[in-house]
Image 1 (cartoon, helix red, strand yellow):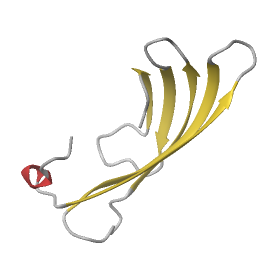
Image 2 (tube, one colour):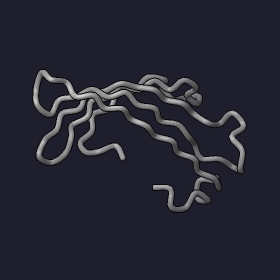
Image 3 (cartoon, helix red, strand yellow):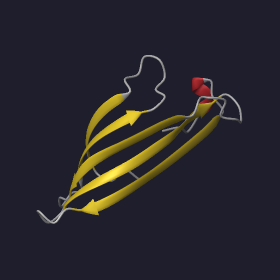
Length: 95
């Protein structure tokens, strides 16, 4: 995905992801998760206020082809033009 950062005018990449999953005993394969995502691409080494922080919560349901994930995340310092709160539905592992 970021194989050539120079094509977007950036030279440095920093990504931090963390997820904490908790099983829910209501149904087998069901769980909730809290997560943190941070990072950005940078012109040069040094964060200089460009680092973004997103916290969120989600539901996970295990299926034979991978988990179905329903997430809502809130970016604490979203760049201009980007919504601070976003919803995602995905199939598969986050990382």
